[in-house]
Image (cartoon, rainbow, N blue to C red; front, side, top):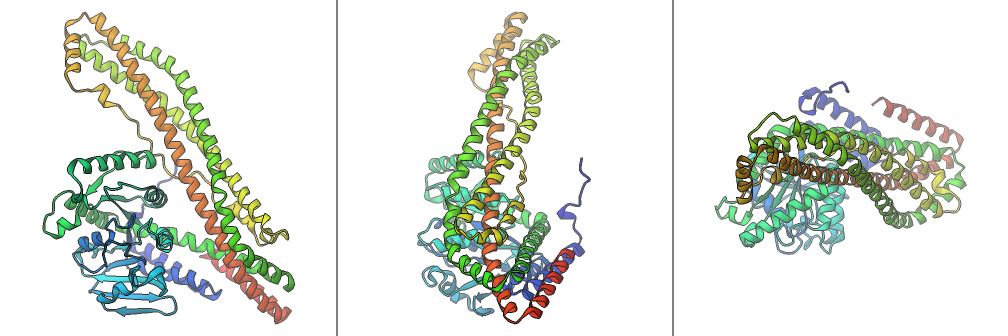
Length: 577
């Protein structure tokens, strides 16, 4: 067993202060090497850690009413709303005196009037973010925000504006918790499911809200809720996920019916009980992400400085020509990974069949022996005890198989991850016959963490509908167990309990299989995302490194030697942080 570690909730203020100091050191180092975007990201994270701010993002398809939901939660009509896709820029709603500020790409923060917000935040007045808005912050004196929780309004998925969807996906790494805003028509889309799967890989707290519940009949609402629960259970392996059915329109009219109060209480509890843990998790993720990116940049700067100038120029030209083709080639690898996953799914199905074939005879023998040992004579009590024994035996057989299957899933995933990385390398090698990609460090892809991450979501189901059914038939069976001879009742209980045991093993074996397949899929998405980010960083940092190396080499050997010494000193400094 591992040594217990301090939980994020138990972190002292000094721990967050030290984390902020580390982030500011990373920002300074990034600024020295010209990575201004990375430096700004580090400073922004340091500021929100110091202030104890956590980001709870509203995510979902366009027209779900995300902006209206935030307006209703805070009690202020400030975010633009409408029937067409409205939000085009990620907007952070924080606690403070009512005000709005906007940061543009070519300048710093500017305070604007709340009435001017649509000019910067909406697709209608800022199409495709043509104004270059980097960030928008809205300050409101709302009680629910006073403990540091920030509500984040994101552009909706699935609209005709691709830039909006991309803006939301790029913000996902900064999310600490998420409100998934769904609807009744359609209940949940494939794109929403994919985004939820992506967010679930990094955050623990997912809150599901079905908005605009007043627009459908009660029976249609129940059908939408049931469908959404089933999809979330199957895709995320969530056990009985809670979905709050609300209507912001009715709340604003003074009708706090439905699940509104329960939903707000859930948010308040999240802010009060988990706010510090969310900030600590954001700090941990951010420091790791920033250090990794800086390490890559410095390594490429050193490599570029040791190459001849003519060779560096050739590499730079090749990089610029190949970058667009690289992204297209990476998308083509998706079907190859899908094929690998399909092959593993077939193997898991075979393992399940083999397990059931071997386990059922053993389970039957053990169950019948256990029923024979039952000392009770009252018929219904004998039957109840037999079903309890079936449940116990099913658990005892499934647990070892689950552990063995998890080890097999990890081995399979590592094989897939290795092959996927090799595919990425081969694809990019083909883009340039001179081997530019390899010499720039494409082999670094092999260092991307490929461990089998994520906790199991498998929960044993007792099938209470069978073991404790309701209705006239169970009542008649109970009477028969009272009236019929004990030997007959015991024989009947054996047969029924074994049938119950068979279904227990079959259903839960399927659930184990699905859990493992889902964990592999989650890890696939995580690995794929890491590889894509790594490749983008390779392109970006290599281009910057070569440009800097060109400048140094043009100034002579002394300048190159000085630049090399400077890079190596920074690498040592980064290692100490």
